[in-house]
Structures are given as C-alpha cells and as structure tokens.
Image (cartoon, rainbow, N blue to C red; front, side, top):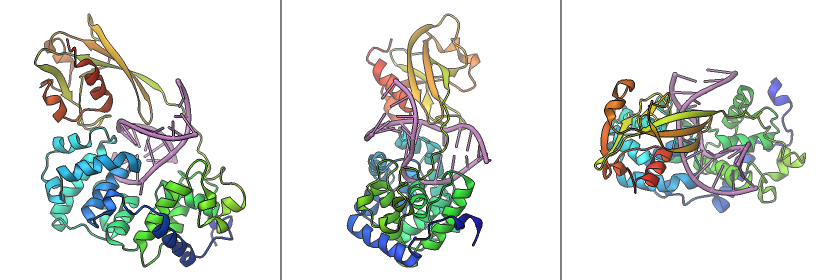
Length: 348
DNA sequence: GATCCGTGGGA
DNA sequence: TTCCCAAGGAT
C-alpha cells in the first residue's frame, strides 16, 4: 500500500460493484440525448470533446449544431480554411482549440485516412488531444475500455474516496488517474464514463450536491463523514489584475479598418481593432469597454483616427478595410463584436 | 510546476 | 458586484 492510498476511504466499493452501480444509474438518470450522442459518429464525438474542453454543455450545444451543418464530415473540416474554422468558433473562446481541431482533422486524414483510432495512446498523438480527451473519445466514440479524468471525475472521486489534496495538484492528479485506471469496466465503458460525468454534472455538483439522489452515497467518504462541503479541497484563490488596453477605430462609409491578430496572443488569429501600447497623440476618445478573461481584466479605450496612415508605421500587422457587410463573415472576439454592434448604427 | 488561453451563467 | 467554474491542453 502506497502512502497516498493509506488515508483513503476504507468503505469504497470494489471496482466491479462501483462501476456497475454507475452504469445502472446512468441508464435510468443520465444524459442520453445530447446532440453528440444521437448518432454514434466518432467525428461528432471528436468535435464535441474539443468544444467541451473547459466549456459547459449548454454553451456548446448551439455551436455543435452549427458546426456539423458547416463541416458535416472530418474531410470537410480538414479541407476548410483556418479563417472559416475560426469564424464558426467565434464566441466560444479558447480559440486555440479551434485551430487544434482543424489540425487534428488534417492529421487524422493524413495519418489514418480519416479514420479515428480507438486507442488512447494513439489519440494522444493528435494535436489538441490530451489524456482526458483521448479517454473520452475511446469511451464515447468506440465504447472501448479506457480511463478518463475531467473536472467531474476529480470532484466525484475526491468526495467518494476522501482525497484531501487540492485536486489541481500533481499528487491528487496522479492519485485520481490511478483510481480511474483501476475502476473502469472492460464492458460498457461508454455508459460508465458517461455516468461519472453525469453524476458530477447533475448530482455531485460543486455547490449543494444532491446527495440524497446519489447512488453512491452509502459508500461515499464525504457523505459518511459529513464533509461534502469540504471536498474537494479549495485551492487558494488568486486575484486577477486589471490591464489597460488601447484600440484604434478608423472607419469610413465603406467599412472599418481591422487587423488579424497574431497566433501567440489572446484572441489568436481573430480580427480586431488594431491594438497599440499607448494612446496615439491627438486622438479623440471614441469609446471604451471592459472585458473579463480567465486570468485578467481588460479595461479598454478605443481611440478614433481619421486615416490609417496615421497608424501604419506603428503597427506590426497590416490593416485591412473590412466592409460593414463583411463583418459578419470574419472571426471577431466577443467584446469587439459587441462594441461594433453597439457603434455600427452611427459609425462616424 | 506555473501560466496562458474565453466566455457565460449562476449564486 | 464579485466570485466561481465548466467534458483541458500546450508550453
């Protein structure tokens, strides 16, 4: 017995009873009609898993539906342009996921003739697929045995097994993955994996879990010890800084001058007002907006200039005049899109 | 190991 | 208003 497992719950069910309990509960109370569950198409699972990375189901659903309409197959996605991909992703956030999904489709076309492998170690070679997504695709697309650990699994396991370490720590991550490897079933892993996620999303929630409806409560460490509100252990919270930002508004009757951002900044490869480090001299304030990211807040000021040549030499990227009509066909960050919607009526 | 990367909804 | 956090991965 290793050090980590010594302090774990001694009332936990053995794997076979645990996973059968989860499977039975899933068939009765789990989610079985999500859009990516309707047809057992590995491409649908692939797309959904990329979109669901750090993003809630309700947010993903409309994006997923539109995506399949626009890119119905892996081949259509692989042959699409990056701009087209980003336009379909705009507003969903974490835009690297979109570029990774695009690269993944091309990789799968080139390497496997468009077939998605059913083995986690092969899947992890695919751009944008890490340990969780590899297990998820194996389970959900192919109903094959594999472990998977996401935020739901971490929360359920921390409570059920009495894991005290902060779930984002390396120690907890290693322990939870070891448990996940020990507990998945050889048969019916799709229902088991879905059941774990469903439990975490609908019963074993971060706040006010509905323990009375949980099929695992009788053998759950946190429930028995009345420590459901203590586990998983909260990490120390950090304050997010507020950063100033300066954007430039240059418009005329035809359209507005925008720039496509570089690939290694926030909003990579999306279009926005040109951004500068300092307000330009003699510029009038056109407006302002605030926006909250995952790790900082942006307090933006938008400065108005009459002509693009007032700015050209201070910018690293080129300006393009985007017609007012074309705005709906390019990928815009949400606050830029919002600002444009607000000011486009009187664009002067 | 720590940081970066979006956005929206709920309490 | 503020804070939390969601089917994580890459660097």
